[in-house]
View 1 (cartoon, one colour):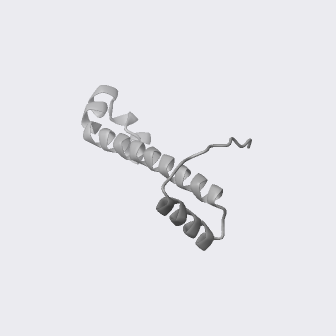
View 2 (view 1 turned 60 degrees about the horizontal axis):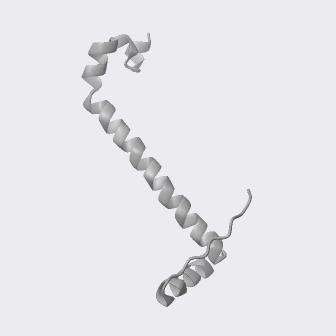
Length: 79
């Protein structure tokens, strides 16, 4: 994967914390920041999936009525 340089200004306390945490994990500050961003974007993905799941549960009866019980995705509906 190609790398892009990103310059970020943070206060000294934040920089020190990033260095300490990266050192404790045995990784570079760069990799530590990359992992934080990946985790953050992963959280958004999980939040979306959870919201979609809640939506489907809330409107399950509407979908069943509109599309029929055989399309609910349940084991009984697949038979």
